[in-house]
Image 1 (spheres, rainbow, N blue to C red):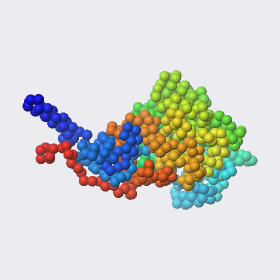
Image 2 (cartoon, helix red, strand yellow):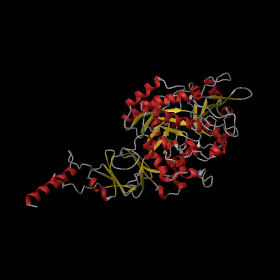
Image 3 (cartoon, one colour):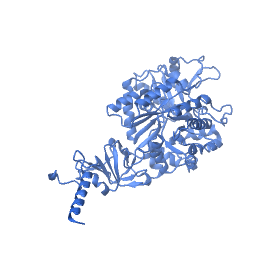
Length: 597
């Protein structure tokens, strides 16, 4: 090669290097804002499962690899965080949540771990005493076994401690409520009050008087007409508390399933989330569903959800789905079963929607390109949801809609493989299967031993090719995903009961559980190309933990503490336990000396 050719090749090489090193602002193209080194990274990317370091620019992952492989991305302006060997993984997506409801509950009476009526009474009385200005005493979390053998509460217990102010307490599952006499009086509920189509005011069989137990949403809605709706500022304050708590436990995105209560649904308050976003206070990405109620899908429903989808359809607030309720819950015999309940053969639950009306609604929503989320707990409701999705996709010739069935607590054996074959997402909540007294003594009793064998059948659905997406249903249970992961892989209580796990064949592996909260969750929201795993081009949503999940005993995973939560490349939560080191800025070894600029 002659000298001219050598010189030309050298110039081309210099130009190629400079094209890598310089951008218009004279910084290297691809230079990172942040590099995290010395981490034990689990990427949830099967092509590169583990790594040591990660480079981030403007909220996007540039590179994942070894410490040395990050050198080309570092400048003097690059922050370099030494993770000091801590475990790093994608941030968590909660695939089923009622975020504003949960946020508001943080300021109410908490009854989740109350074991006796006396304990509940003590907490309610203390709250009433310390909140003398509260017009209503509201709370949630009581469980059915507290009121054995009937499983239902009575107003007299609340009247004994707070007779002069209304008290209204939501059960842990969000399907049964408990009112005192004052609350019933203010809501106008008497022995003459008729039950709504999809709800029930439980009555004394001898007198016909309401006992204070309220079943299902339509009855609850009648009660809530008497309860003052929180003000805008109260809702915003609650959301800020909820966002802090979500970031504290490692959540980076949630899938909102609509509101449990009047005026507190996420969709109905979407402008509040937009306000928080515009003021840089929204630190969790929101994927929202509009709730369509029976008896039919109306033009008003379609107008609302179409309008919201046009306005909110980005990485931070995205309306792309519609939520529908087909049935209730097993504990109160309102979940729709193919066969009668084992403990009460006179009941088999009932569908909230007429099957034909529901199938018509699903077909219309599918035609318009909406993802559909159906609450279906009983095996009859699960089958109807699957039938409707199958019908809609054939009628509309749609593909890859990823419609979802939420909960799936019981299922017919022949319906298990349909999730994989028909491309339906199994959206399930591991802590709903927590084998406590409610699950083993009421849920299992009601469904009977044959249906119990297919209770919360995560592994069966996954083995048959179905996609799992995990969540919490907060405020039904804690939004802490690490407790959910422990429950998914052990099927035991925190004290190891029952030995060997409840229905241990339905356990999933740690890898499966993590994926159901990350990449599987992203897939369930049509975002697997941009979220859910740590690889170049995806959003920089990640967590750093205090323990390596793969080296932690399964029964200790629930104790995991988040040290850092990062959303869009920004730290939104830092634990007091975090002692990671931010190193001095490093110069890019490929950059020319400063005096040559």
